[in-house]
Length: 319
Image (tube, rainbow, N blue to C red; front, side, top):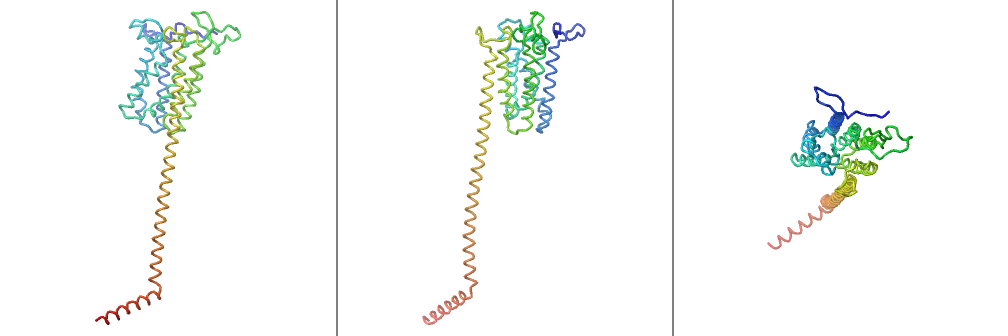
């Protein structure tokens, strides 16, 4: 079994070719929106919240993915070729960068916490990536190095590339399954945590790590390099993702500890104030008791009467 999809073509409608790549990408977007709606409902966000995010980030994500690919592909494109995204040639990192610009604009204009928005998007993004990798299978792209051992020439360990007549590592499949695993982790954390940024940081760390290693397994012709160098741009971006995720996680933990310490200090201050107030009350109570005891003591009353009589006699003598 070679698992071929001839020219990536699904079917035709009145001469219009509908390709599997487009169908699969559209499916990924649909599933991503459904996941975002579910997560928004779990957090009691507005029902329109996921759709607003989609309108802001999706167009910029498509543009970013295409521009990124064109910049680092080392090829020249006509305008028509540049906008023919249904033929493939989009880079996920460019899509993430473009989508992030859209999310930043949305957060600023709508006065939203950016990490709240990215936390909602992250699980949807990674499940869309998992599904979208099958579009690479349909186009027979984003595959790994040649598999020489006949015992390993079977899908999904490897995939047969028709135009090359060779079996290659099915790196698209590996990434699809890893992204599915990351999705499960992010969904679990999203449900459990109330802290903004945790889900985002985990996405950056986990996806950046897996992409770095899988990029090293790809066929050289399927890798985008920085200029004329031999440095894969995706590995550089992956490292930046992991670093950003680690710093974000550290910042969240530091802020959490700072908030906890501030609460402890506030509680200690309140306790000290209460103790001081209690001591003042005790002193006042003691003074009141002494005064009441003095007034209620018959001997003290007799003494006061005697003192009053003595004062009266003195006054009469003076007269």
